[in-house]
Every structure is written in structure tokens, then in C-alpha cells.
Image (cartoon, rainbow, N blue to C red):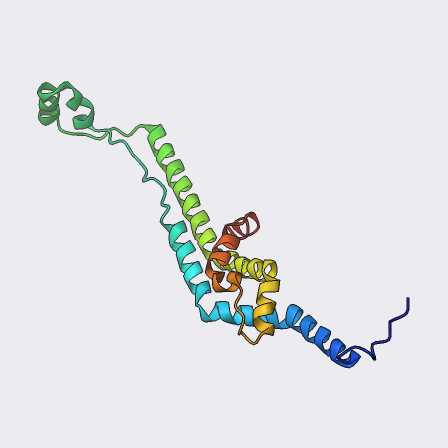
Length: 179
């Protein structure tokens, strides 16, 4: 295929090539740079990580219920007469062998849950970074228009980049990342 003669066009072929090069550089390079700087300037990364950390750490496991087995707790079911027996003979604690094992198992489960929460809280930065990358990639055209126009034209997706970031954060791709 042969290129047509561009000498009769109102603009030169060099100007067309320069324009296409400018568009390509804006689309593939400048859009990411401007988008990343704009998002960093908004302090979204810090807000995202602190919000996700607090959300994760607020989910505390249920406290371990350990039944108290002593005379008052057992004989107290029989009212004043049961309590009188405990008062007369003392309030010894009953140490059943399976209760210690049950308490150890509950404590281990709670420690494991706490470690999982701490691990998830330490990885929230990955989710926030994923949201930034996904948002920039899915809105590349809007960011390139914004960057290529020297920020004179601000597309809707760039104006509302915060909601775009939150949508990206909740996407399955970022929700499974680090959490």
C-alpha cells in the first residue's frame, strides 16, 4: 500500500507525524505521570490505608467466654439454700481437666485470628496501590486528554477521580489483593 501525497493538505506531513507522536507520548507516558501526581497530591493513598486499617482492626474477635465453675456458680442455681451450702463449706473452684484444654484452644484460635487481622492490616497498601493502578489504566483516555490539553480540559472521570479510585478499590481484582 502506498501513502497518498500529502503535499496538497493544509498542514504538512511532519506536523501530522509530530501531532501523532504528541498524542502517543501523552497517552502512554504523560497520562500516568499526571494522574499519579494528581492522586498523590490529593493524599488519597494515606487516607485509603488508614481507612482500610481501621476497618480491619475494628473487627475484633468475640471475647472468650470461660465459664466459672465454683460452688457459687453451680449451687447458686438452687437459690438461697444453695448459696448457704457454699457459705458453710467454702467456695472451692472445680478444675475439670477438659476446661483447661478448651481454654487453651480458644486462646490459640483468638491469637490466630488476631495475627490474620494484623497481616491483613499490613497489606492494605497493596490494595490502595492496586486501586490507583487500575483506575489510571481504566481511565487512561481521560487522563491523557487532561494531560495533553495542559490541564485545560478536565474530563468527568478526572474530576471525580476519588470515586473512580473507590470503585477500583472495591473491584474484585483489588479486593483480593492483599486482603
